[in-house]
Image (cartoon, rainbow, N blue to C red; front, top):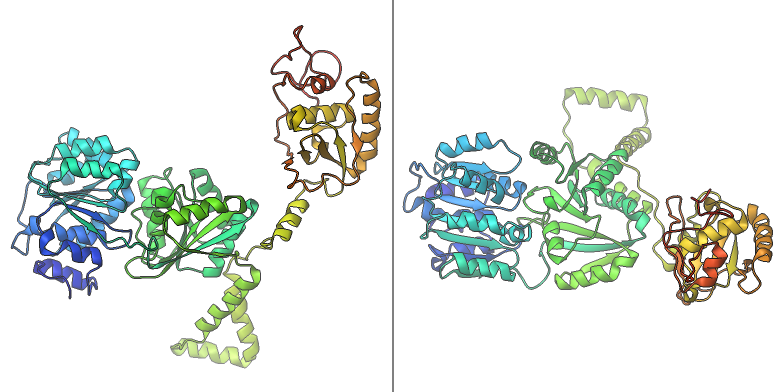
Length: 599
């Protein structure tokens, strides 16, 4: 045991939980120079911070005794940013101080406040809570902080990021001046420095975060995919790793709902966790993960702190984190307490540079790989199945009778085949992914058409960006000139001096005839010529043309641009006496006053 000079009750609790040695941050807070002093501790997620500050405040709570005397007021206060983290801290401190007679009270949003006030009146030793709920109890007179000997701010940087500065200051101002203040934070931005200067005295700084990767026990990978393939890539990553517990992070509640439903539909045992769920629903989701009733959790960043699942070995960033700190806190849900973990970022092609910059800022080296395909997943499945079936087994009498009957009625090959099929039946099917090569991505983009646009003809007209061409102008013009509906126009590509667009081959002749008749009706000085293009837009990327792919939800409303007078006139927009267009109008389907487009 490497926990020196601890009360016997805490040593026994640590030994009972299997703690054979202290982590670096725990070792630092037990050093003689740290005892009794205010501390500013920089420690990464999963480094044993909760036990560290539980040990650090032991001298204040127990002194030279092994057990705690009854106190009518709390002796220690721990403030955490989220409900999940506060409840996790409460659970850890509860077993740590149980043998010493310590009583822990939790005060978090989403729980019954009357029940919490009742517990506070019963004389808890340590109070753990979130800033908002603690301030509420303080203002109502239910929380007496006058007897505090130690205050711990866990994940202080996150509390300030979440806007809890005012609540923290009100709580800390209500504590005794002689109390110890321990500030734990993964990062040390200027607001944290200012908070430390205001509420601490001669604080000892402890830093255990390495200069290397965000977390030494986490291997980082990045997978590039096309945006429509993100969900399929997530499915294949889950199937490839087959982690005992995995978590997928999304940026919004809506994305959590959608991805949760998608994975559920594909056969995964999955739960959701976001700000729209009540505390009871969150607790049930986490308990399902701990009980192995669920293996996958889809969550927003609300779950990036405070979730401690020993079996969680895979973190998937289904949506890119907003910054390097969020990346580290999300990923820190795995690779905890000496266990190994994997964090995978799913990166759309267009966001790769941003992610590379984020990884450099976080000093994380990630391996850029392709998303696993069906063949790779099937090969992994075979390896896992062989390993499982070749393990030694013990049979009771009932099993022996069943085995003998199976061998009598089926051949060993047939029994093995049935075992393989039974195993595969429980596994969700992998998804087909587009090959991750430039040619394959271009081909896939070319092949992704709306129904009816598999066979098209390119047309062009000599108007482009230099003439202020805009798809909102172009679409109504094409519909009126070619006597077609807006749903019969495919991709529109606008170049510097010309515009190309697609028309289905089945109506291309009809469109060309109608456009020619309309051109003859134009005035001779401002004709708009629409003609077939044998080649289509040439090398759109090099000529810096913009590509617009229409769908049914595209709007055709627009504001006219004065510089584009010839196009305005050709489009049928009415102008004022000064030659300026009436703003907010759009081309009418025929003559007369502007009306909503018929198509």
